[in-house]
Length: 175
Image 1 (cartoon, helix red, strand yellow):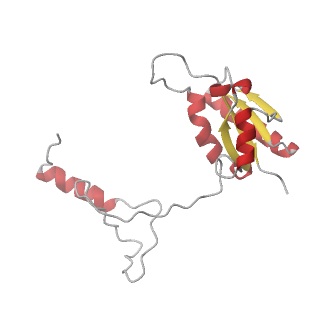
Image 2: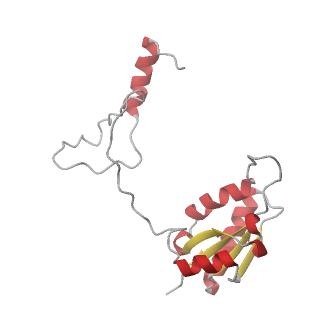
Image 3: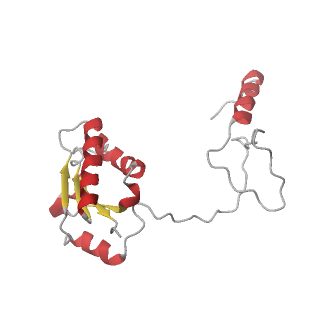
C-alpha cells in the first residue's frame, strides 16, 4: 500500500516532474503543436494510467541481431573454431576491460571472425545465483566499445568451449 503525498511533498514532486526532459524525445505527431526546446516537457504523473498505442520497434544492426540461421546452428553445435581466445580469469574490472579492448583490436586487425571470451562460470549454489561482475559487464562494454561496429553478434559458447562461462564474439567481415 502506498501513502498519499502531503501538500509540500506534492509541490516538490511537481517541480521535479516539470524539470525532467527525455534523453531521446519522440518525433512530434503531425498536426500537433511542438513545444519550444527550452520549455519543460510535461510528463504524466505516475499514478495516472496513460493508454498509448504500441510503438513499432526498430531493429538496429548491432551486436546480436545480424547472424543468419546457419551461423547460429554452427555455434549451437560447437563446430566453429575460434580464431582468437581471451581468458579473463584473475582480472579485475579495469584490467579485464583494457585486455578485452586490446584483444578485440588485434582480432579485427587480423581479420578474425570468431573470438572466444572466457569470463568464468557462475558460482554454484541455490538459484538465483548472481553472475560474476566481469560477465555482467561484458554486454555493456561491447556495446560501448570503440569496436562495437565491428561486432556482428555475441552468443553463449558451446560446452566444449566453456559453456556458461564463455561467450563467442562474432566479428563482421572487413571489406
